[in-house]
Amino acid sequence: MRELNRLITNITDGTRAAHAFIVEGRAGEGRSAFVTSLAMGLECTSPEPDSRPCGQCPSCRQVAAGTSLDVVRMSKSTGQSKNARATYKVSDASEFIERLGMGAYGRYLIGIIDDADTMSEVIQNKLLKTLEEPGRNTILLLAAANRDNLLSTVRSRCSEIRLADYSEDVNDLAPEDPGVSEARIKTFTEIASMFEDRKCRFHEFRAAVDKHIKSREEAYLLLDLLEDELRQKLMDPANSGSPEMLQKAAGHIEAASVARMDIRRELSYNKALKRLYLEIRQN
Image 1 (cartoon, rainbow, N blue to C red):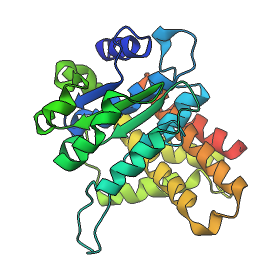
Image 2 (cartoon, rainbow, N blue to C red; image 1 turned 30 degrees about the horizontal axis):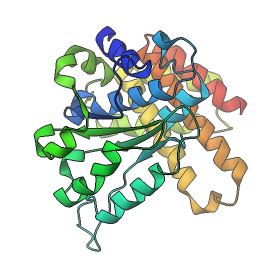
Image 3 (tube, helix red, strand yellow; image 1 turned 60 degrees about the horizontal axis):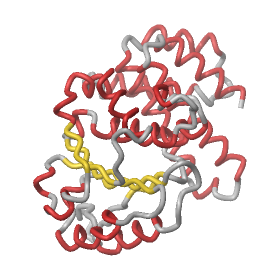
Image 4 (tube, one colour; image 1 turned 30 degrees about the vertical axis):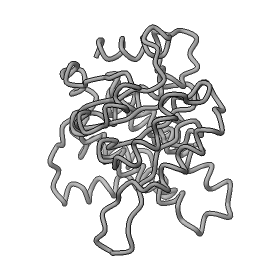
């Protein structure tokens, strides 16, 4: 992943300076993972540019966990029909632009538009002024499967990153789908519940991981299931009156994201999962 790391370093240290980027590539090629890594690198507080993203500082952990106040994503709206497909509306763009105008809390304010090439021409035109003159320390990342579906006026205001040029590195960012059976997913879900089950002992968790988790891809799936469980807890109205509960869940999401980063950096997935278990149980 040296070429991708060098690209992120060049952007974060200003060598490749721009205030808006189009990231072209299919989501299955690791597009989301790259956008997250780039956002982490921009927000990273490590004093050494070559080490960004460090994956350990609070800013990196918050971006990875999706809890950073400086990373803003344009939301999609759904119609009233149950089968309505989520799409970008003019109101979504207006809210996005308004939030970008509020400024950054950390190093940068990062605006992300997933599937940017699905935006209507009306919405793309609405974004032109923001793309041309974003606020101070504001960077926009437009993720797209096909940049040619974006207006030429949008493309002319952005620097372009084609993930196809980094195909080997991008494949490392996005592990292949292991094709896990429903029975295995059920088992992994049960293991994920062990992280916060106070009746579960460490030796029981260790035995379950050693028996059932056989690859990095399966470890990633376990972490996905754990994070889904924790995010449901964050969104549960029953917990809205408990700041302590919400803070704890957000901290556990951050810890899971760090464990994923550690595995990507070649730490044994067994060790990363067991360390995560102990970290969560101590909080």
